[in-house]
Length: 345
Ligand code: KG4
Ligand code: ZN
Image 1 (tube, rainbow, N blue to C red):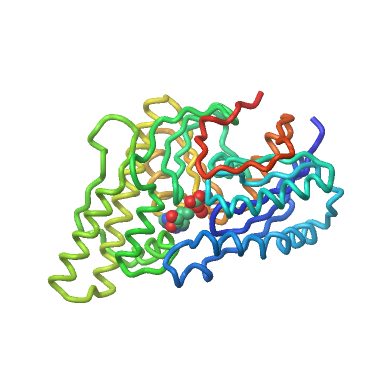
Image 2 (cartoon, protein in one colour):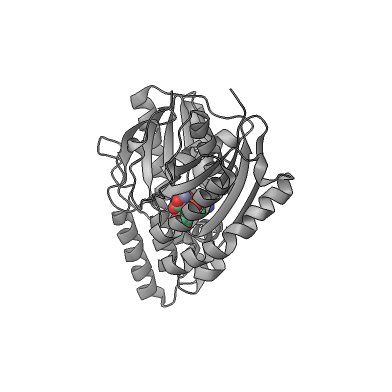
């Protein structure tokens, strides 16, 4: 197969990510700008501010990856950009820039599915998982268990009926007075806490592989209120204990359902992907529990768990190599079921 060098652009939410992936040499360069400081004073992502900042950062990051890889635009064989799911204005920025540079350089362009890119991110590691596998996708907008038989060969096994795991982390972090982005802040606070509060492990006693995190969120709110009523302002140690109890409840719930998915499919490989896959306790628990049943868990290095350009360049490269590409029209979507993607091969 002719080798291919692909530029990837990610702008679906609050990180601008740009990277260059080469089908023979691997990842050549990647660069990321996080908008955390921009959104922090609002306690969450402000979509219009996100879009405007992608406009500011996209081209400088593009120049940066070309410089660090020592390449020129003429060295690029295709351009991939995130086409959804995500914030529509933010997606439009990366899609317009990606589609335009591809047109100017006379190479094909392709809109990539953000969650497919997340689930393929562990392929960027030195020891990639072999197909078929079960993927646990845990991000700010999605919690899904998916059987993966190939690129575009996805069977949805279960998903969250309400909040996503990352969303639950972010909301509970807010209840504990932590700044945006809540997930990593809550998990850092949990390090010094003891999981002494009894919180539910939602839906684990029911058959099936669906999740529900909104009841757990309410249970955390109840504990926060009770503790505030008995001791006034929550001290740091109590907040850390609540954080640790919440984190353990989410991690155990995700672990129980992942084991059930492996058992149900008969597969021995689990791929953990999406922002929450950066969570240390989740990784440790899955490693421990999977070893016990002769299975293995694979995940990306932390910077490729959360949003990044490398996963978009990688996923785009696989589909462009197979001859897939978009027409000239620019098409992005806020919602986009993973199972709608065409299969490769
Ligand atoms: O994949 P991602 O970067 O963006 C989306 O596609 O949504 O995931 C972001 C989510 C946020 O909810 C964030 O709080 C969560 O991932 N997250 C974490 C950790 N790092 C990021 N949650 C728990 N522990 C972490 N270490
Ligand atoms: Zn993401």
